[in-house]
Image (tube, rainbow, N blue to C red; front, side, top):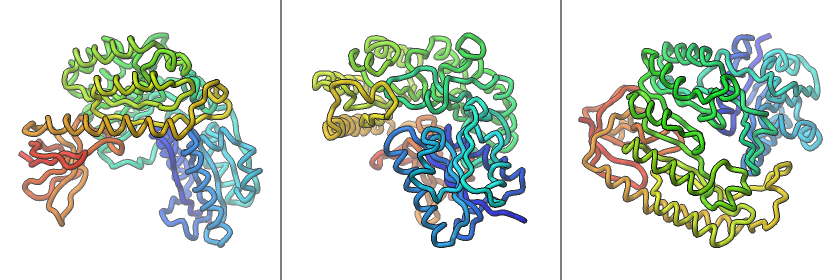
Length: 442
């Protein structure tokens, strides 16, 4: 019997890569993936559980699928991913209509487990070791064919006091370099031109396997692959941004001068409570080195407001740092206490409303900063990867080295009609529309 399975994947790009490997395993087992949930033999919800908002989204999607099951529109509901790993038995207890809960280690045998559910096994629970999670293997890309994520490690050994990742995914596990080069080569042969390197901490790559930081060497080897034009880094921790890494970025034209560096705070007391490596002075020194060695670098960061012990003075220090640093891209999250983490029980908890208000203040300042930085780009030319064409406005959208897909801004440009998706074109900027740049193809 040919089974049809619907698939919903939530959360971060790292979880998305796991989902792509699940899809490949199902495809190899001749289980059809359908975009139409009505009539599906099963729906898999691949979940996130990093913060409360992510858990709420996951539960909402599970409940929606359970409702479709009650209506007879889908037959089975299967939960995978981080929520399944973190809240294993609780899912069955709270949502007994779920047919299977499969932890991340179960991805190694995912097709066989899904078939067992499809063939009638009830209340299937499988949560083997997290180390069983496959870090290599075939993928069915869910991104456009010209760009893809390359997950270079799983788990994390930093143990920030607010973070659930070590308890969900375990300590950092780097993928062997030869395996990554082979995977990247296969992606390039399939048409991928931009590789986006991801891990919980990309800059820690290799420390567990080789005893030293190996990201610079990995970038060098990946840049040698024919067909790969852009290499982009996400999730770089400030304490591991070495001069060697910056030198590779400065000297290798394929490695984009784009650094996504989650800083989280600048006040020393708050950083210590977060169990972050280094202090405010070290973070400022890292920013200065980046700006010195990579003058054209786009610097993206994230911060947490309302962390326990964040006094008004500590917040004012953070706000001043944001204004003086003038990040190109910035996101702010309100502290979300997660049960089981050290930060959950810290004294001096800050009211959520206060944390949210502080985040709004920083983002209002950042809007003004970004407007100034975007206006500075008027009259300049950038190489842009084309992402789409709108025949009604006869304009295209694309991204330059300054923009990671799905999280940053876009460049909207006109030219000589339609440009092929995934192709490169030089665009001269002539204006700004909110966050996006406006330009004309040269």
